[in-house]
Image 1: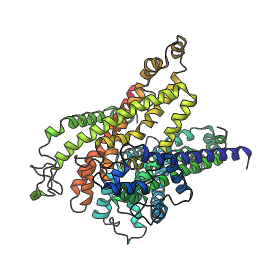
Image 2: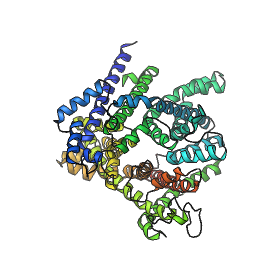
Image 3: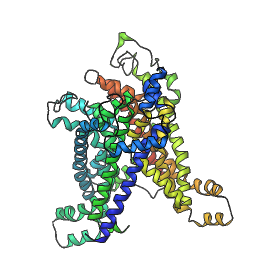
Image 4: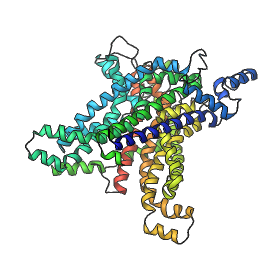
Length: 313
Length: 277
């Protein structure tokens, strides 16, 4: 490994660690800075004074802020993320661990859907500019962006679950991997639209480069030029855009889990919201934001490995 | 080929989006007076009716008139949209111009905060904030959406300010000894209006979608009629009465699309250089 690459990786990791520390601090501060009393939010404003005092102690809100912060950091450091209010014997991290993988599975399959649509559609649109293929891809991308996922989910259920009966309805878990299809399209369609546009734009740019002309002049097969010389270079900016959209993807999983009645981080998060189980809410936010930061680091590092120019900036 | 290109061009210039946006604001202003029924009016004899002359878009679970819910819901969407974008625009412009004009520590601090807020998926952060309030109302919803809503405007304002501050007339104003506030207000902000208006137009669509999404998830202000809440009710009875979800979701989708198209149209109008590839 060259010195430049090592330094690049080191700097990027240090910045990510700083961001995660910032995320932890912000999640801590949220509860303290938002006007209004979390005790009211949890118990309602008609609770008995002794209950309020007990909860205040349990929440450690009666201790100095610095000590509260210290114990919050302690819970993050030991990996427990504190205890749930409603299920006191459970740590937040054990609750999250129970639902973590279904959400990751949904996120990954949504990503897969998005890339499997976007790369062929974007490349086809770019290589066949101005034709029907191009217009179909561009219009499709516009529609995919315009349909809110809170509506797309019900629409897909109606079409593929009710009308055509190809895929299982929400709550039916007997279908194996088929149960993942509709939720993945619900989450992945908007991303597919964004990535299609980006693939098309950067493919058009790359295909006008001299080395593409040179490859063509050497008599390489047109598809080999597009795939090996074009796509490989065009996909780097698409990757960056994809990573930047990860937040929207994770928000999408929260929505899809509600629509399709799937267990997951989003369902845990929403249930914790309605129970006003603040430690669980904080834990979910923390885990989701950390996933986001780590994936962005991974993409940046990958970028640095693939494209040596990045390391210099 | 050429005729086809010209045809497409004309199509894109037709401001469909602007028409939708104007229609939306008209309905948001007048909706409650146009509504044939009270959206809180329960009529258990007419549950889940399909569209009829009495109920042009049908009824929901309590026999509530769907058209009336949509007309009243436009008001909530409009209020939330305008307030969120207004607050975000003011805060974002202030933060962005200061960061771009001063550079150095101010820039690091503001950009750092913006990066940090963007590390949270926006809906997730909004929900976490609403969780800390006993009974989330419209004002809480607006504040929760504005907490990270300003970041996009700040980024636009900062990038533009970076270029503008090096221009001769700004240097001249500085050399004349004008105060920083005056330079920002008189010489920098007026040049940001174009890009910020474009951003704000699609931002309104995004804020309306965010309100619908939060209401759909059950986190909106409970007593008000809302498109998202109607979509949620419709989803619960999707298999038996699909018209409720179809109408509610379609309204949200068309409105958001309208704001996005209007934003694209404005961008093309204000800056002919930035047409899409």
